[in-house]
Length: 335
Image 1 (cartoon, rainbow, N blue to C red):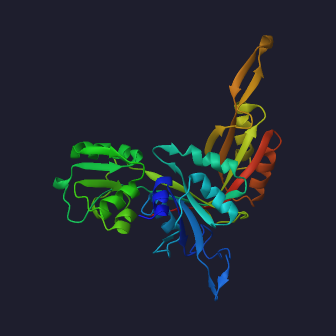
Image 2 (cartoon, helix red, strand yellow):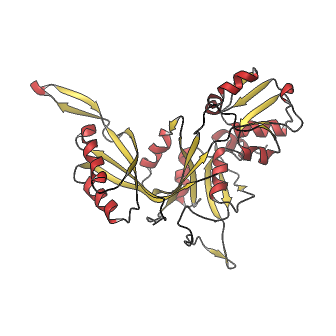
Image 3 (tube, helix red, strand yellow):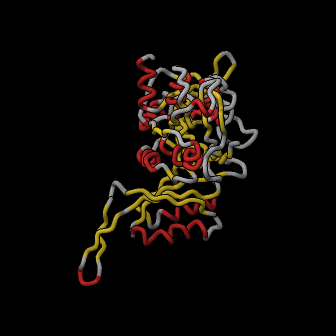
């Protein structure tokens, strides 16, 4: 294996090139022009977390369906570098995981969005999780000695794993494990992974949808730099980050800014306010009480260009330490 490939597998982020098909925009809208080459649009460069065959790779190919043969750059990156890669112009888009419906949000990626103001959310993709049991061609259940996968996937499939009564091993990257099983022709090991991992590495899908619970979805965000707000058909959404001068006690007032204008709030997150992590509150008798301070991130229905949304965002500024729109974009559900 080349040194760059080793780095990629360890660091967990590939840069992929995909044909520009759609950017979570309204049907019929023209995509941004990233340059012409002989009368043809050049392929858009997309950074995604994980190696080929990962769920992020699957999300990238869903976002850009004409990229049947995604071509990986020979480099490995930390997740932070997905953002700096966008800011430097080395990639046009990034796909990052934001949330799993059973396990909740990925706080680290939300922190990175707050720390990189030049990076905006340009799209959202929500896709059902299909955990598959993958093995080398010709392998049967009776041949298996162990099953490996990422801890999250193993946790999603506990009942099936218990029924199989095989050795279970955690790995950092299920797609990398799938590649190893395929390349080394390991016959006593199966991997819980994605359908695209089976396709990429020529593995057999022994079983599909082996997770315990229904309603298992992954939410991915598409990121870009310097993109203005879009009217995105009916499924448009705006994400706003803000701090509150009076702390958590001002949250009801902040949400009412949207609700009073008929704007539905669909999601509320909070992260530590790194600029002011602790606030001192004066109580009766001169006692000061230390409270943690937060940045709130809300998703609301509607475009940033909608006058009602724009007025609500402006209204937040009357009692917020800071307000920033992280993106206005379309929401897409994958199959």
